[in-house]
Length: 288
Image (cartoon, rainbow, N blue to C red; front, side):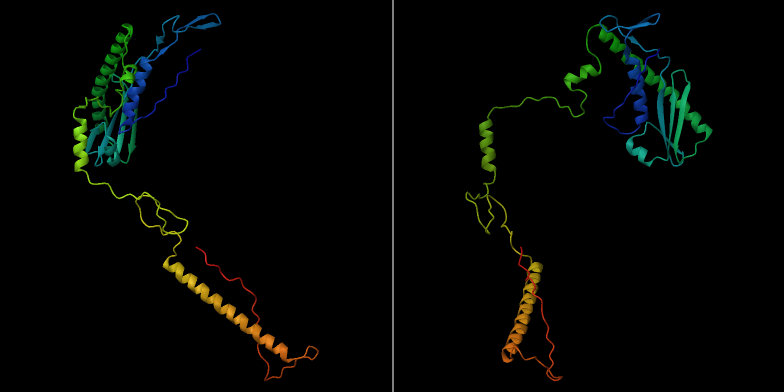
């Protein structure tokens, strides 16, 4: 039986070289973590609470630390720990993970740059120096944390929460002078411009609208120029259609009055007329 441990990382801010920062945060979290103590007797497994027995650390044999290198101009220039802006213009990236014993754990290369063996050896030597420095910082921080916990104090992230030291824009409280506040307020009011005219009663520009205070005249209900032209054309077409329909009906009525109901109506070739019957159309309504 073994313990199953999962490490989750949440990025609060990213300004480049997230691989190195994540590797340091991950290894420190695993070194700082304490699991419950366990005893096994035959097939019976007992997991003790922190009140019964002190939790025990994990068995970590070495600390692999990642160091990133950015290359520019096809490997001519080398840069350690690139920022987010530098990562945008770099040609390639090389990440080397190594422990303090100068043992290479992994090498990852990305980008469009071709590296020579001498360049990789040079990066590995720089990595050995950086990993030694970072490992010493990690061990010193863990020792300080353990010492503070034995003394019953707070250390690290737990201490930063009440004081809000983890925020980047934390501002120290400053004393405010409240003397002569009324005089200062009077001077500010005297130098200020007079207030704009305010209408106490609503102003009715068009039916169904109202305006209170400052603003411009309401144009609700007013037609645009193009809408006015379209409305005029529609009214003209409607009047012409109505006049034509009325004319045909008048001619048809006068013809029926001059003839008898029982006699058939015979039209000669010269008397034939073309009668156009217009179906009733609904006149367009003026909308707004």
